Length: 110
Image 1 (cartoon, rainbow, N blue to C red):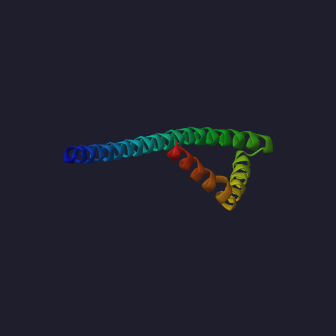
Image 2 (image 1 turned 120 degrees about the horizontal axis):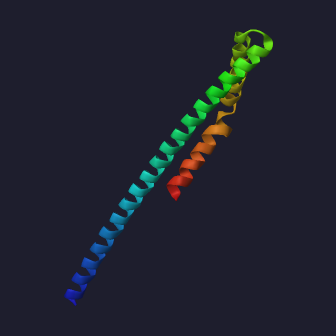
Image 3 (image 1 turned 45 degrees about the vertical axis):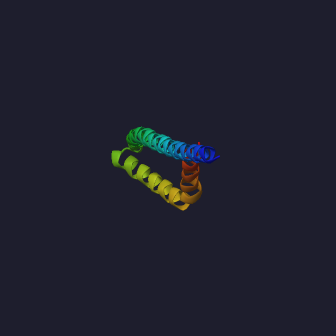
């Protein structure tokens, strides 16, 4: 009877150790997955920003040529970008913060 109790306690200890190791490995996998997701999104956002920057320069030059002075195109595009920044700032909670938090939570809970 005592040997059965010792065996049961030993199996319980092994079970707890195994579960602790599984939780640790799941946390490591989730962290690595989340970090790789964030890094890949930052790279994509960086490339997209370079594209938009070059697009705005091209549009500025085109508008400037159409108006007769190159600097007018840059002023118009700067004004439009300023309006876009104000709108993004005012809508940052619904457009950016909530969606980013939801994405990260979904990624962590995978």
